[in-house]
Image (cartoon, rainbow, N blue to C red; front, side, top):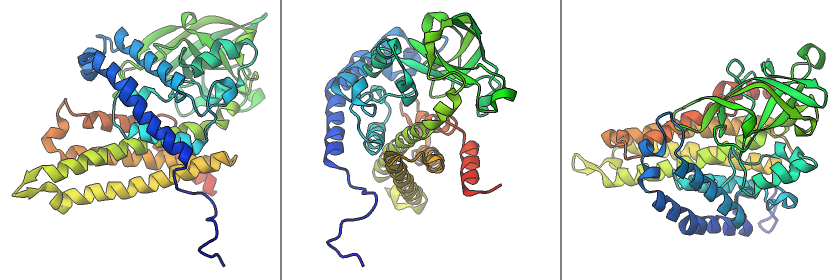
Length: 407
């Protein structure tokens, strides 16, 4: 029988001293380095109509400032701190990385959202870089000096990515790539893109085999169009690959195994989205609670009405569950587990609670929730975006059911 003096078994929900100091340093960095840059941009950042060109592309000042935030964050040791020290990261645990993602997102929208590596930054797949790829692509990405994009989704193959039509054929010591990629985050601004293409027939290699990842530089492909999704205006694009020739040394990892390689790191992407979604939910609940206490109607604060207070309380309870699931996923990953089922649970729970809370906070604010100078509708759009990227709700539920053994 356990005693009161016995050490607790399993995961601890305490924030360890190293993580606590990192979170405190993040706050200092945002105050000292990021907020002054936001002030310099002024309306160019705060007004979405001034933040973008007519076609949706971000104006050069914003692109340059986002790049500056990434570089400064990398110099301070934050940007890709989850990657190993030998490539320029800090080697922090997945639990710490999750907490950092959540902490940054809990401050709401802002330039600070660029200080931790997102889709434009280095991910574990890029850790397969070898030889000259390390110095030319991997380390500059870790330092925030170059940005990238993950080009897997296609117009006719979204969730069913193994059905991709993009192909690469060997021609001497080069590969010739043809195809289209769509909804590729950071494609309009990336220095290089990680492009997935079929290199061997599916009937020979199986559904998930025969796919290879290539490093394609920005001047080797075209942006056929901007995919101006809500909450991601100007950030995504359609990539056109027409007889693009890349040398053999641009293959990332092994030929024909890229899909399996990407699946190995699937849980990390969903963990990161979980951290962001929980952080945004925390921010929304804080804003909703403050407004419910300050806004009066019928002679008392609207938070006194159960129709308002229960919305916020239910959101807090669901956020608590999503956060606990996120911490458990991070802990399992730190213990060497792929935790596929857990990652789908975290992705599904966290993004849905963010969506529902954002909707409720708009409702709590009434007409003010729809005002352009508030960010609640933007948060609602972001929540919807997060429910789709890295696998839709339906894909997550399919995965959970499969892991449960449901046929």
